[in-house]
Amino acid sequence: MSRTDILDKIKTAEKDAAAIVEKAEADKKSKIADARRMSVEKIQDAEAQANSNFESKMAAAKDELASQRDALLSTGKKEADELEAKSAAKVDEVKKFLCEEFERSINVTS
View 1 (spheres, helix red, strand yellow):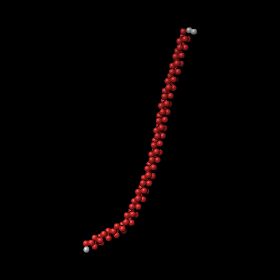
View 2 (cartoon, helix red, strand yellow):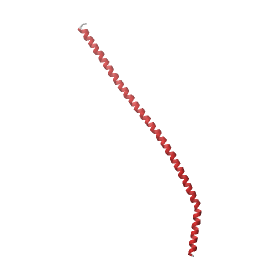
View 3 (tube, one colour):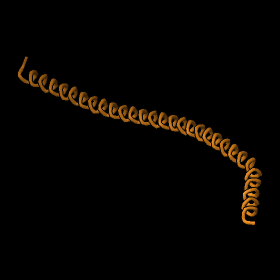
View 4 (cartoon, rainbow, N blue to C red):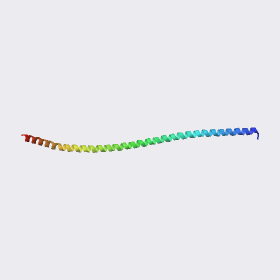
């Protein structure tokens, strides 16, 4: 083999090596870009799932609080109605008592 043939083979090998390195660099950049895109997608999916879980738990908590509120209001209304009924029943008794006390105080002074 002549010296020019050897130099041509070396140049060809260097070009092939440079092409392989260039392709490897391009593949590396492509894979890094794909990995970044996939990580962003995973983060967005996780955030969406977290938001969905938060919203569903908040809705459940609001429903629970609404039912507790309704129960407390119902109990309070019952108690208020009972107090009103008891006070209405005692109005006549109080009127009678006040009249008797008034009459007694008038009778005592006369």
